[in-house]
Length: 262
Image (cartoon, rainbow, N blue to C red):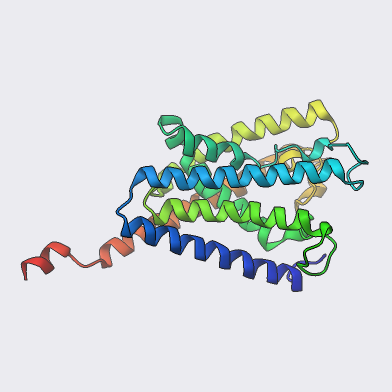
C-alpha cells in the first residue's frame, strides 16, 4: 500500500491520539501524586513489557501463518535485530537496570529511536508495515499492521515521556553516546547478516527500504558512511532541538521566588 493513503493517515491519527492520551494521563497523575523517578521507571518498564508482548504476538502470528514460509516456520529476517528492535533491549536496560549503563543508553533510547521511528511512520510502505488490507478493520490480516503501529508508537511514546517527565534531559553533547550504542548494534546486525545469509538487518546487507539501495553493490563503504552520517546528524539535531526548547521554556518560566516575595 502507498504512503499517505487512507490507511496510513488514519493509522497516524489513532496512534498519536493514543500516545497523546497516555502522556496526558500519566503526566497528570505523576504531578498530582508528586511521583518521581521511581514512577518513571515503572512507566518505561510497562512500555518495554508492552513492546515485548507485541513481539510475542508477531512471533505467534508468523509461526501460525502460511505467509511466512509455511505454518510452523519462523523466517530469519524477522528476528528482532533491526534498528527499531533494539528498543526491546534498550528500554529493558533503562527501565529495569538503572545505573551507569542505563544512563549511557538514554540518548539512544530517546533520540535515535525517535528518529528512525519517525522515518518509518512517515514512509511505512518502505517497511511493509501497512499490510494489504485498505483499512483498519479487525481481521487477521491486520494483526501485523496493528502490531507494527503499536510497537513503533511505543518508540514515540517512551522518548516523549522521558523528556516531558524530566527523566532524561536531552543534550546535543550526548550525541556520541547515542552513536556508540548505534554502531555497537550495527556491528551485531552486520554479523547476523553474514551468519544467516538471508537477512538485511539495519539495511546493511541488501538495503531494502533505503533510498540509497543502488549503492550497496558497488559503493558499499560509501553507503554505510552515508547511513551513519544521516543517523548522526539526525540524532544531533533532535538532541539539540529538545535541549534548545528546554532552555527557552526555562527562560520564559516565571521566577517563582520573585512572585512569592511580591
